[in-house]
Length: 396
Image (tube, rainbow, N blue to C red; front, side, top):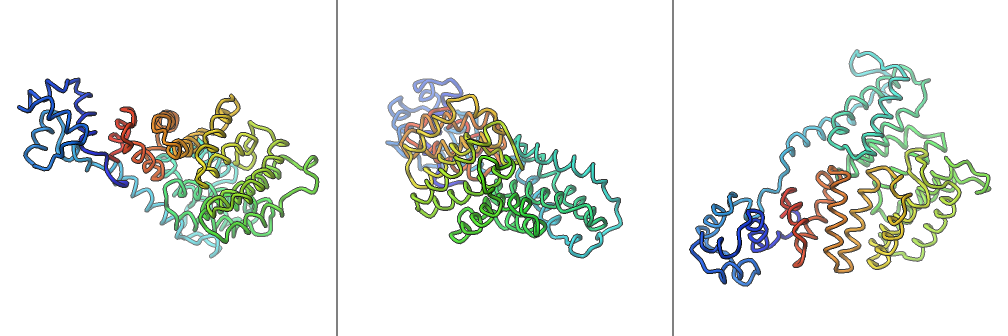
């Protein structure tokens, strides 16, 4: 389970309402008074006797574990774990470094490899994480094998394969594996400032909490920055701006509000020149992306009111729907944190349910999102919708 469970009385009230039982009819079936049921649901009376808990569970048509909130593992947890093990195994090979494939398998033609990588990125941006977990082991093997036998094909495929792998592993809270994938991408990118910048975007996601990583982001950003912003290619502006955003989020994590604002303002200048609706180097960078970053930064700084204001501004325009599904759903998780900081569980619930509707895997499989759902569900006046979602996820 993530954190303290939702009080059992709240859970009883939700399950009773789901079975369309009034407090009186529920009390009658238990042989108790309506007042007793009301006190249990409000938390005034505790449930300590195992026999009573079993009787309540039987009337509600659930097992005692569900009533107690002990069914926290998602149904596909075992299969999910196997997928991560396969990705770990794929990352543990060194065909590129050895200059030869570990097994005599066919080399995937370069054009097919490009399609595989494009499909992987599309799967990620649509937040189809279970499918991507299945795709990545083969993709990584194909990339390593092709590059080992044909180094002249260039490092782009290697960098992109490791980038998308790192992006997914960050989502799944697999920090060590994510760092390994991002480091592989950086190594493969050596000597090419564009590839280094693109690989550094994922490295920034991995090292978000590292106090010393901000200088790495800034070095990569200013290396790719054009001398003249107005004449700079949008591709390079997107990479530079994305790296400044990563540096800003690191500054926010460190409590450096001045540096956070300055870096985001600088990124916003570049975003204005790129515009919305683009996805150069898989960054989704543009004015709206910077506004969403301001939300995440404000949340990290503990300024919920500022975060909510930026959230409502950014999502109040149609342009925000141009961002990838993954980006929008991830932002809604940040927005839920912002609403929690302003003691507004109703709106926190609303945006979480919205995130789950547009990208179910973002909420169901991302540990950070599940934690936020549990936090909102514990609020005394949390809406029934979030209690239902929390119970579905097994985090209550």
